[in-house]
Image 1 (cartoon, rainbow, N blue to C red):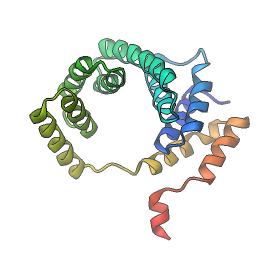
Image 2 (cartoon, rainbow, N blue to C red):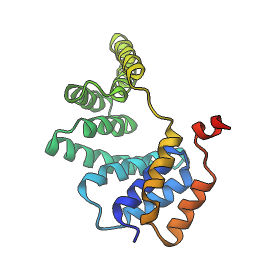
Image 3 (tube, rainbow, N blue to C red):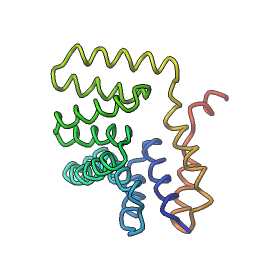
Image 4 (cartoon, one colour):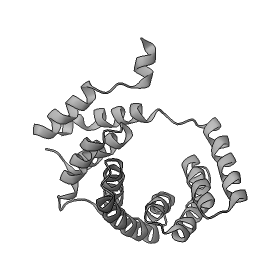
Length: 193
């Protein structure tokens, strides 16, 4: 069992739930596979980089972000996808390639101006480049869009994601995933009590 897509969603769910050691573990297993479809490679390397960064493995995280940027850029050019430009901009930013990050986020917003997180990203990158007016404008756009379409709680999102694939897992991977579910609470669930 443990199909590639389910492993990817499992690893991604641990990012949402901020389970950084589990995240590194699952992405490591995923990235050892040779059957990862191209559309998942950028996200897998990016998520791995995020998790390595959170557990203070800076050099390893930078290597992962390099791979992520490479795949984000390939996907962006091939498919002209806003999400590839968005996440590519974050990978570039992590690598201190701020001008590239700026160009990528501008392209992302050109393709999809209604995605709030892209505006937040644009605000961060503009600020790093000293473009105060652009940064402020972008932050205001982000706030407007969030009012219209608020985000779900990230932990809740991660729990839902994990629940959607847990039946496709087996062995030690499934056992570890079940343990995560058992020990992670959604804020919405906590507030209901």
